[in-house]
Length: 428
Image (cartoon, rainbow, N blue to C red; front, side, top):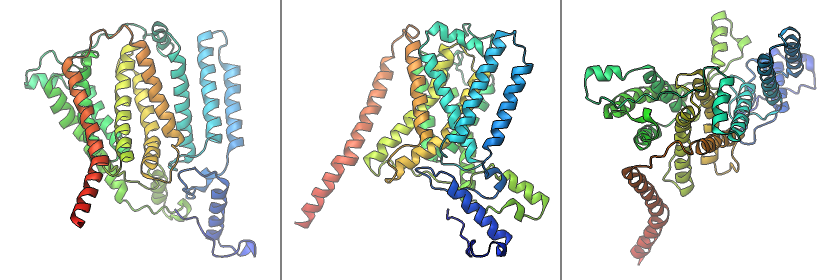
């Protein structure tokens, strides 16, 4: 997006500047004073100018006023309450400091500070995971009681594969709140991935993962019609369809961002204020995995990270004894959705732009978070899953890996040599 340009020299006669030229001058000054992202050089959005002025002193006053209120009026005799208030204050200070000091990410709507806060929350979640990694399995389960006293007890796992006859009653019994969760989840993943084909590849891959891991997680033991009719071709399809329709809407939308003061009607001002929570612009993700080996490897790595994010939550709730409908699980999924939006944008920039030499902070942080969750699962899973992988699972995924390896060798090595040899033969 081009920088706003002034048509007159502002230093020659400041009083002669029109209101529009003064706004352009203010927008240019704000853009120069704001540190640019190393990968995304987007100018500051000047349409709501008040929110783009520095407010560090105001934030400091509000933060200290909140601390003063808690210090004076919270009951000091309750040690558990004091601990929770102290940890909450610690996290608040970290988020506020991060909003002030962190670099901007790829998004500027609703405000760059919002996404700096999202990155701060990702760092806090990663620190919590690192602390959990150095605890025993029993201690980790008991630490969950800090968030909810009812946690820390063994949970019965529900199996969905007890009666697999395809009848109306069985299908109706298989419909629960998690049907809606499937659709909402794939709606969110469609907004993150922004590619119809890749969404379907990942949707089918996850069902195959459920088949492969059903011997470890009983709630993956579903009937065939639950896997393919309810999940893939109903819930997942609905979420992907609606999500991609949203992507098409934002892709075709004309982004004409007028300043809110330039809109004459109250209804128009309210509509413009609501538009602040929509994307400033939209990037279509064209993965093209067969273009070069780096693209193919990046495509496979992205798919592995998505699967890791999906599977981690099932293993963590099983190992830490947290029921699937608990607010902790919902909070983890919601936070991961927020973490993934800028991370996918930065990953795609690194994946598709040869001039981009390093990964963005959001993407790097999310990858570290997913791998830390995996380390916790590996540590806490010792002694939990004694049954070995079925032979057909090992054979199937070995064949998949062999096919991917053979395809990459043919596509990026042998095919080029074969084409060169064929051209030389024709020239003779």
